[in-house]
Picture 1 (spheres, rainbow, N blue to C red):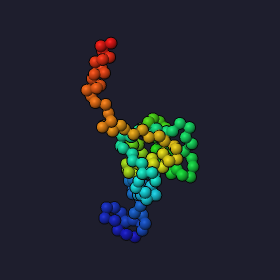
Picture 2: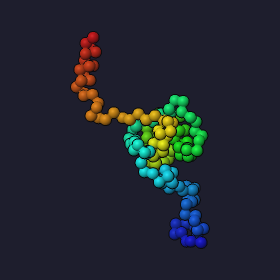
Picture 3: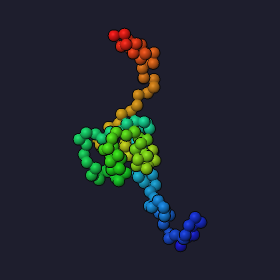
Picture 4: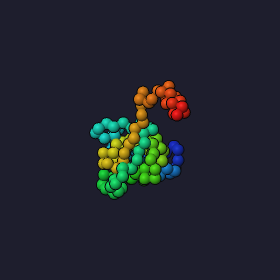
Length: 136
């Protein structure tokens, strides 16, 4: 037995179990050691919206792990941002991005990326449109 300074003695190999949290799984184990989402290198912003693809296959299949199914379950309720999915699944954002890349490639989800600020209409133009509509 090995001595643990923070608690009672543990059996060898039991360092992957936490008395309060239960079994511990390293993030790289959930993603298969990958740090980037898919071979296409898609990047998911924290505010990107994730929606289940209509008519997507169910959550069964060998390609889906429990974390993939958890993300699908969260998206089934409503469209959610990457940050919300991370919080809801209690997974690090980096892991969620990799798993979403898998789901995107499998055709299970659709991602709406936010409009970059440079492409947003100028406030002055919007005010002119509002004034024009009021004049009607």
